[in-house]
Image 1 (cartoon, rainbow over the protein chains, first blue to last red):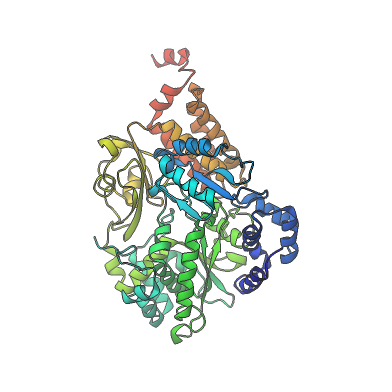
Image 2 (cartoon, rainbow over the protein chains, first blue to last red):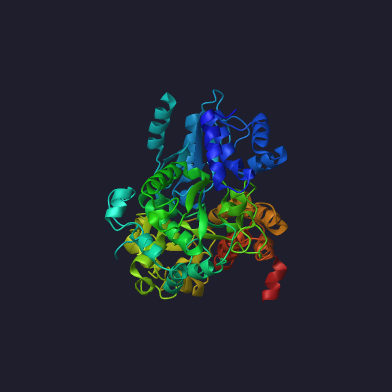
Length: 156
Length: 423
């Protein structure tokens, strides 16, 4: 389920940690990177790989917001609506995104291209309002800027 | 003033540029010192933690056992998730070697065998920048075995979080590194006795650790004279909300909040009046705009004003701000981030949010105002970690300092019988 490269990387990481359980988060990140989400089979795989009970893996996956148990859209648009972004017009950003993408907050488009999520503070308060797509931050947003960004992402 | 944490030097994130500007000089100096002298220097400098709790850094280091046949660890807390806080990110991006150098000095002083830089999962892009910097520092022999021929060996690794505010709490952070849910631990035992895998561990914030090279390089006397005497040093102030120039400003501690807002952050758009500010992130007590005169970005001054310095994330709200909407959003945040271990926090945060939601939707009742205080008071101090307090303080202060806003929004107004009593 994990690539040779990642298995090797996990093996190299072992020397930094006292227990193999400590590799749960790194391993889950790798699974998500390779497969887009963490299925039940993937959790069983990680459990076996690290010698940790399945229930423990499930507990970890359900605890952390960024780990997904279900497939999500190719572009995951995460909009911060916390206080600093809210004060600088996050509501309008959300409204515009919902209209532009044709989906509501928390939904994935039928073609699995887009998922729209509300997220907590992303540490982008000085460049609010913002959203992130994958690891990329898009900041100081305006409706015009969003239209251009979405058009660019559509092509990807 | 001169900037030390984020100086205006191009490409400072590159190791050659960092070295050309005196980088790793402090670490070389530390390696020539006795370990206890390094700790003493930090202790005398007066440096206090920049992650919110303001604990004296040098003192924290002295809690670590001096002689131990077991490995000791250091965690650098870069979980940075407090709403209104975006300072550590600047260090990761513009001056990562300063953090690495500080980590090395701390590891040397405490005999740490491995340091874990715990970074929030959302900062994937910045994690790559830190990893690049670590790679370069390893290549130059600053990290690893027998560093610079000193006989001292230590390792540094980045550990990525996965979206949990609570992992910024030091014991939850350790549980997260151990591959567990981010549940805070009951203290005592404190991390210095029983930390990662039961070993002695110290946790310092990214900005805190980045101050260490300055202290070692120029000495504690020099450092202790910067800014406010009881909370000295440079500080990264993040200004957000209703200002013309939001951003992170490096200032000496003790600059008046109004000066930060007007001189550095360019004032309030449209020259509007300031209705309220959170001085140190969303978990610090809100201050009214009319009580800001003379209040400074300093632990002592903010405490006297009825708030705290927190992570120095100054959130500014102008006169047209709907404070009910603000506090409802903040309550929702703490409800979402409560780990669920302690009943008062798990239930209380949700309850607070529901009540505030009623006010937001025009369904608030007069008695809800005191109910907010009652619930918040029963969360505060009754939980394993400080998240309960962090959820309670903004609500308590908002109700106390802006009670009129709640009264105006209450759908079911003040009962007649109370009016009779008041007469």
